[in-house]
Length: 268
Ligand code: YH5
Image (tube, rainbow, N blue to C red; front, side, top):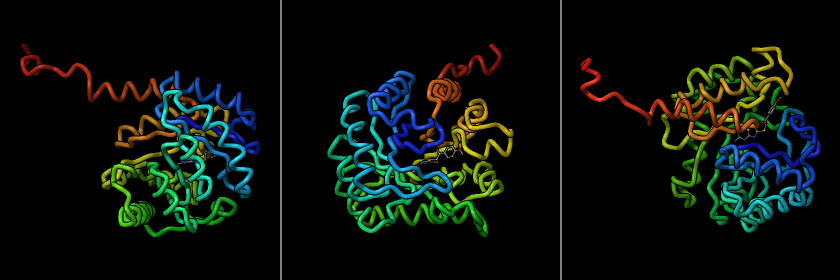
């Protein structure tokens, strides 16, 4: 899943992709590099980010979704707003990526009626304040229980299981110890009934490990993607698609390529 920010305040790309034409060119490049999903976000959810009015969010994401229809990837809309979900689906989105896991009033029903698949993410608190004092008993148990409860609520409302995936939300109301514990025990989250998505690319977790600025976290991000894939994550959200896809193809080769024959195993 390649990240496409269409927010003027987004740190990572410095607002370079506010212009729809530039955003689409960047998306097409990520698709060429092997992205199966393009995640289009018009509201920054970074720590401290301010909410964006619905009209502004629509103005940012709809032209990009319309332009990328048929470009060869599933289009994901990164939103929590019911009106944006509906409009994005009509414009050609196939996935709703909601950091609030459809908890906003009307969001679950809108997502259901959209026909889209949904990524349900865990977040403790709200972006504006979530990094102030995150607190858990056992972070893995709590995140897993939250995601299962949201996924069950979706299924009870009428979602087929195949339309759902879950995401622990690295950095969303989690300190370094919480993030590392989730990473260590990611296999426990992957063992639930829904496919696991993760977003680790360029995150502050790497600042604390490597002391590197955001633009200098490529190797760290690729390492985290490989780690997550080995622990059975099925969707990896990434800014640097070419490098990440190459690394994931190496992981995939373990499962698919050149298994020894029985004779070779016997030393023949
Ligand atoms: C995610 O994990 N994350 S937006 C801070 C950074 C770098 C990157 C300080 N949307 C996720 O990418 N959706 C975001 O450096 C997401 N899972 C899902 N499903 C935050 C982000 C970032 C924040």
